[in-house]
Image 1: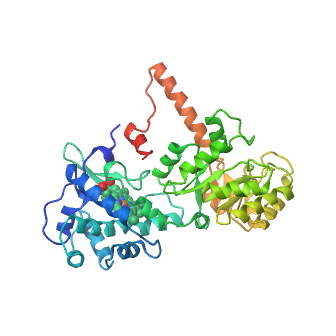
Image 2: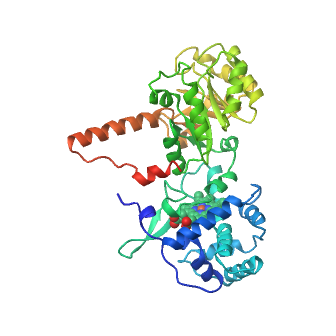
Image 3: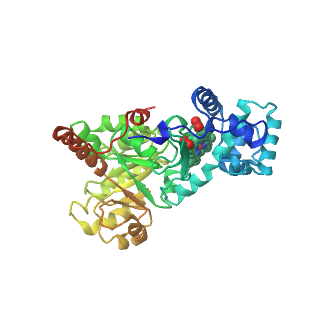
Length: 414
Ligand code: HEM
């Protein structure tokens, strides 16, 4: 399957000596081949050296780090794409920045380009706060080998893909709402089981990923919910915490009967959140685990999972358990299999997390007060089925369902 983002070229731009025309002709964004490789390396080098304090509007913070003013950058951004008309304000703003940089060369163009491209971060943040998954930059453009200019939809690849993929993604993410703030809107949290599945979800635009204990355990041939996957869970957390997203790790019941040890474990993971199960055990004792985690890792979003509901044991105590765990410091409450959702969300003064079941749409869950929906082991089980179906299709000579390309998969590890 052809991937226009990776395989087709960006539209070329004519040479230009001043203003926006010069900028377009001198930046990484509208170049290909050796010129693109050289400018890309220059851009990545500039980004790596940039000491940005992620406060205020991203373009202002990046301009400050570059020692430049951000005035006029919005005007340049509105004229930047080759299909847009160039305004006098945009030309003047480019010339002001060139004069301040002191030279009209590729380094200056790269600095201005960083400012211009970073303007997309405002929309990115707005989408995250609103729980929107449609791409902030909806389309980009490519030229087919036949010379036709086409628009490429960026749904599922909000930061692009291939050699022109956004090099500013990690920087943009530093301005993103915290994991806790994402619960003020509506958070769809897909659950990964290894690095590739998490990286693919991040590539698709999810600002946060969780892990699934079943997926992690089953990947290693270990039974789930038996407290036997501590090394695998810790190793996965260490891999995922470097991704440009928030990570919440399913630590089952904490892999220890000692609350302090569970607290130390959570503090050592370096992730934004954890799920801690109560296993439908004594809520007074389980609250001690919540307390110990919050004492040792106060910044980690602790989602307390109540297991009485889906195990059909002592369902009436679910609300009391929730209030007890919140009192012990929990930040959110997760009730798999929750029924009577609205009454529960009204009674619990914290973000309530449910498992996707397909019975209600995301909009209906939002209307009932749910703030976070996770997919549990669903994606892992879907992937398993897809793999077996593909093998059977090969054996039966049937068409194989669509799959990620080699380069696309390889890029997830970089
Ligand atoms: C710190 C902020 C940002 C900086 C410095 C930045 C920088 C850049 C640069 C220099 C490129 C051109 C790369 C190349 O052509 O090789 C680029 C491409 C791209 N950026 Fe960003 N960017 C930022 C934020 C964003 C945000 C928030 C989004 C949207 C979610 C975004 C979406 C894209 C896309 C889709 C492309 C690829 C366009 C294509 O392939 O045609 N960027 N970015």
